[in-house]
Length: 255
Ligand code: IPE
Ligand code: IPE
Ligand code: MG
View 1 (cartoon, rainbow, N blue to C red):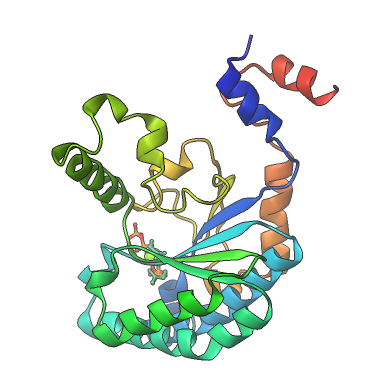
View 2 (view 1 turned 30 degrees about the horizontal axis):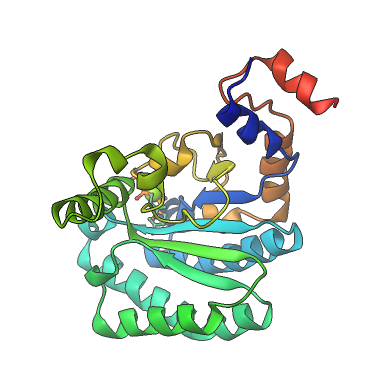
């Protein structure tokens, strides 16, 4: 018999994903294939970001989470890092009003103290402007690392134990989960990685526990509605079991 917890997970089963996360990879190779500088691949990728947001909105997803800059991406050449920061700043400036008009809530996840004061202010303003929007939640993961996320949650928990607000016995999967990024949203159902690599690259670790993983060779600047639809179709065709048997799942579905 499924446990109460797995039953609760099963009852949330819907044919379409509610929360999709994407590792937007392949910008550099897209540019190199055209004999251009890597940064022009990042610029071309912005168009795919717009298209993916609009697709997610039309599909009525609860949340779309995009990996824009990892905590390891600081290791790239300084001119590429500063071009990426400039692009992030420009896109925040040019797109936020449009997101707001479309009732989209923008959240940035990651260690924001790594950014310039100006960028941090822009991020805070964009989040404040869109905070009460009730349509799609768009999370941009910037200076984000899955290990960082787990560490910041543990650190917060340890501080609470140290000051007597919680006891060690209060540390559970559920209480730690509340401190992880995006705990306010539906769990990630589907992770898409473009660009052909089949790895997580320190993106969401905790949150991907039961996500379906979908890898495509399409490079991020070429990722369009067709490619997104194919990923959704692959998700719909898979059987999610949450630790149960396929029979148990089917018994629930015919009820
Ligand atoms: C992903 O594209 C975008 C960022 C990491 C910011 P890449 O820049 O990693 O592109 P490839 O993998 O080199 O082609
Ligand atoms: C992952 O891509 C990070 C983002 C897409 C922002 P990378 O290109 O940085 O990952 P690795 O280096 O191939 O693992
Ligand atoms: Mg890459």
